[in-house]
Length: 136
Image 1: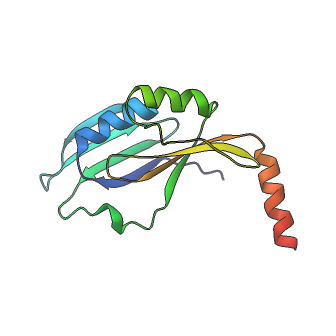
Image 2: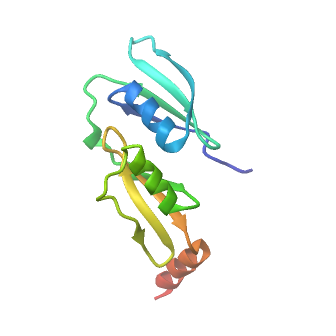
């Protein structure tokens, strides 16, 4: 039996801001948008191999989440960061963090949720390093 992520489902403060953000930053396609039976707006966005279901809710508080971030594997951190700066989603303070096994940067969505854009330089080395640390 094999598994893969089918969808992510989260509450957001403003459906339209998120549709724009996820389309322009991550290339998500809008599949559906409307209102649920409770009158709250929702949208379904198609990502790469998964979907993102978003909906508004009363008393939305983004800081109440225990979900740390979503990491997206990317091919070229430099070109993506430059593109996001050109579109106004990343400022000059946003920097690529160079680590032993990756190059990555972090960006927050309209509600402050963190997204990790990671360009792996040696993912196998990363996992091997974790195994070695466990043995020590």
